[in-house]
Image (cartoon, rainbow, N blue to C red; front, side, top):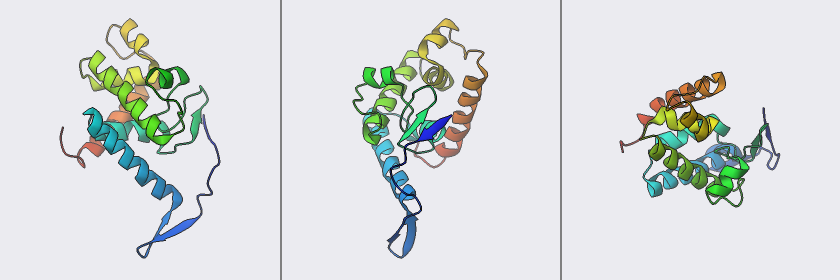
Length: 161
């Protein structure tokens, strides 16, 4: 169960070039720019980062899981600290920290995206203990399938890396 920290009333609308955009849409666009920049800086596929953020937080920056994960990429406090994130609710820090961690996992698991995603969700130790297989944890298996499905859909909208 995730809960939001109310910080902005999202029913407020802003007029931009004759079009009406909600604050949430504007923030989402800013976060997508941050994610794209992080992907390019770290030589990661932006579609993968977008798919992870979509699954983890649905692009909501000030969200917490019941287990304590925070922000757009739902970083646990220890993970955030390990990857240089001082403020997990800062969207840019959260995206860069999560992207660095994802890059590490991709390297650790020989660019195997499903294993890297399983490790992102369940912890790399569990994947190592499962001898390079996705562990028999229903929530993790659903997570991996969902992110992969989003990734495949998003991939067609990005240049190949």
